[in-house]
Image (cartoon, rainbow, N blue to C red; front, side, top):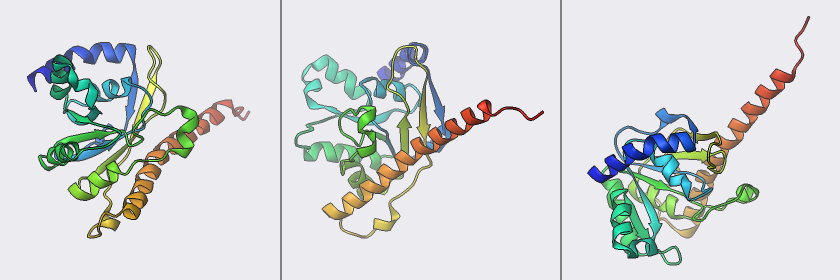
Amino acid sequence: MFFYRLSHALCYLPTNIFYPTKIIGRKNVPKKGACIMCCNHRSNMDVVVIETKFYRRPFILAKHTLFKNKFVGAVLKSYGGIPVNREQVGVQSIKACLDALKKGERLLLFPEGTRKDISDEESMSLKSGTAMFALKSQAPIVPMWLIKKPKAFRHNVLLVGEPFRLTEFEGQKATKEILQEASKIISQKMQNLRDTYLKEQEEKKAKKKKPKEK
C-alpha cells in the first residue's frame, strides 16, 4: 500500500498534465465500502487516468502474462492487480475479486474485456463477469464512461453515474440468461451516461449558434 500511495502521488501531476481529464459525477463513487466501477475501454492509459483520479486504490484484473516478470508483477499487485487469463478465467481470479469486494474494496472493471474503438461502441457487448461479481457480492455498480481515447495533451471527460444494484435479480440463480439480462442493464446504464452528455453538449452548441433577439 505504501508503494501504491507513493507512486500515486508521483504519477498524479504528470498524468493530469499530459492527460487532462475532467470528472463529472465524482461524488457518485462511494467514499467507503465496496463498489464495482465499470468503464468502457479505450486504451492502456485508461487504468492510469482513472486510478490517478481517485485516491482509494481499486483492484483491477490484469493479463496474467504480465505477472511473469517478478518486478512488474510486484508493481501490479501493489496497484491491486489481479492476474487473469482472458481465454479461460480461473477460479482464483474470481475468488480474488469477490474477496476484495467482501473486504469493502473497490473493483475497477472494463466489461468489454478488450479495447474498443468508437465505431464499435454502439454494438458494445458486455461480458458477464461484471454482472456475476455484482450479484454474488451484492455490491453497488458505479457506471462510468470515458468520452475520448486518452491522448497526450488532449482534454477528456470521465463521466461517473449514480451507483445502482441489480435488485431485480436478487434471490435468483445466476444462470447464463440472468447474467445476460443483467449485463444488458449495466451496458444501458453506461451508454446512457454517454448519450445524455453528448445531447447536453449538442444543446449547448445550438444555444451558442442561435442568434440573439434584438
